Structure formats: C-alpha cells, structure tokens
Image 1 (cartoon, helix red, strand yellow):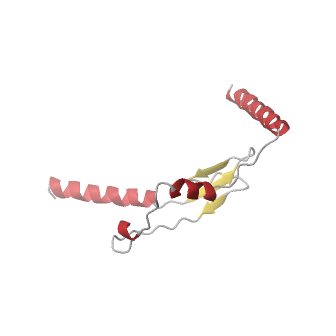
Image 2 (cartoon, one colour; image 1 turned 180 degrees about the horizontal axis):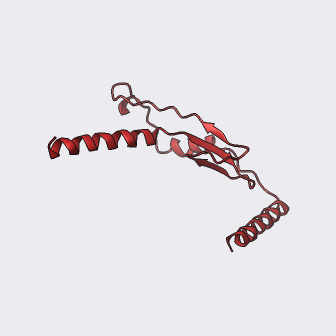
Image 3 (cartoon, one colour; image 1 turned 60 degrees about the vertical axis):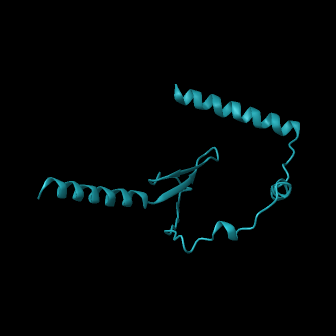
Length: 115
C-alpha cells in the first residue's frame, strides 16, 4: 500500500469511530437537590432513565421551503409570544425569603464539600 491509500483508510476508520460516538446512549437523572443531569454513561442513580433519542437525516426536498411558511407582521409577533407564555407566578415575600435561605444553606454545604 502506498501512503495515500493508508491515509484514506485511516480517515475512513476515524469517521466510523466518530459516528459511533455520536450515536451513544444518553441518560437522565435527578440528584438530591432536584437538579436534572444528562450524561453519556450510567451514573447508578436511583432516578436514572435512558433517554430515547431518534434522529433522521434531513432531505432538502422533504423540508418545507421558507416561502411556504406564513409570515407575521412586526406588530403581531410580540402579542403572539406574550399570549403563548404563561403568566409568571407571584411569590409571597415569605416564599422568597425561604428560597433564599435554602439557596444559602445549599451553597454553604457545597463549600464545605469543596474544602
């Protein structure tokens, strides 16, 4: 084999390996603080779930063209986005204070773990 063929074969092998890494499994779990994590390896957490991800290669002929999509006017766009968003929930002062205290306690525990 000459050098050019060796380089082509090496590039092909590398692309196959990279393709299999992209198609790996994704796992979702929630930690003790309620934070959701997504990882590529099983963590062993009780709340861990394998996330089913399906992807398909897009084809330019099957995707809708830009001219086929309806256009909105500049005045209508903010009204539509405002209507689509839910009303923010108003928290009482006591709830805000309780949240702040909980955050400070978590922060202190994380600092202790870090040290």
